[in-house]
Length: 425
Image 1 (cartoon, helix red, strand yellow):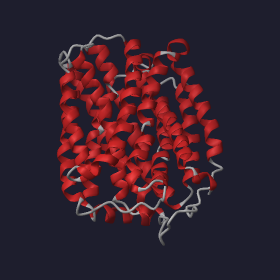
Image 2 (cartoon, one colour; image 1 turned 60 degrees about the horizontal axis):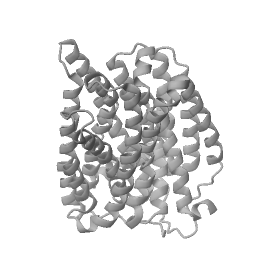
Image 3 (cartoon, one colour; image 1 turned 90 degrees about the vertical axis):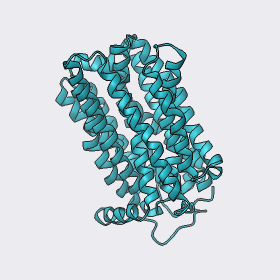
Image 4 (tube, one colour; image 1 turned 180 degrees about the horizontal axis):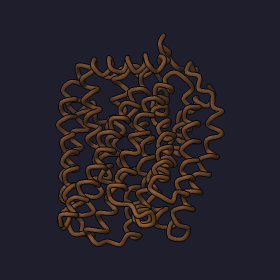
């Protein structure tokens, strides 16, 4: 179709939508001190909101939406998702209890689950394998930009308008964006594309059955997904970083919200763009290709993340480690998602992406947030002086473990090279 003839314009639109998705998702983090105070939430309740609620909806629905995106119009799947999450973002602002906020956030997650599987498949179609890491990095720059802007909004608009009014405004913006997306015709046999005989997925039960065969037949794919899950314990820790800094390191909440937002924008975006670009240019020179490149990145950034837990707030080492923790997960999105897409048949790409999101949300986000919240509550109850510090160090150790998993995937990648891209751009 005509709108696909300019991949850069498509990428720009997808990036804007992805930024909005992560603003809506992470406003809970940016307003965590205010929301936990106003609704009298415990650490465990807050951890459940930031973690398990997303698994119950986002993770499961990502797999379902991925299967639908492989079979039907990706743009209409995305439009439905944008509409759902935006309406429920506005509903989050009206919540007056823990139960009401759980219900609203559950459906925010359901809507957001439609975006990434459909968008990643579309990007893999529009960009060749040699440029795919950069393209994925640009799209996933929406994560740090969205997280960063959520903290910035919390520290600016939130101070004058409050968290409820901010949620209402974001919901309205999303509803308006969803309308034009719904009218884009996602015909997969676009001019200039080489199409195979099985470019669309099967019905959901058959598609999910085929997923097991794809994972079992590619150990490199399975290991890459496992390493990617471990890296996301950084994101679980991010849910508690403002609480950690305010409660245990004595920093100002509003000032730190603004700093976190700016650091997320700067170093998260640098990671997403730089990681994707460098993986495209350097992976052919690194043993194990993209997987080897990812193992090296973890080994460089992981120790800095650990060191900053013990550094004085405001010191050079403190900010260096904090920035490394922001940079690392985003720098891995381009090479990891590109490698996963390259090891996956075209008609299974959205489904495999949905499976990756399910695993990330179950093991890193839900279990990770629940453990951080529950264990820190226990340590606090028994009189531990710095409960969040110690549990966040355990998360850092799991992130470093990902280097070994990527190294094993690197040994296998040459035996299962990525499939050729179908795009000519």
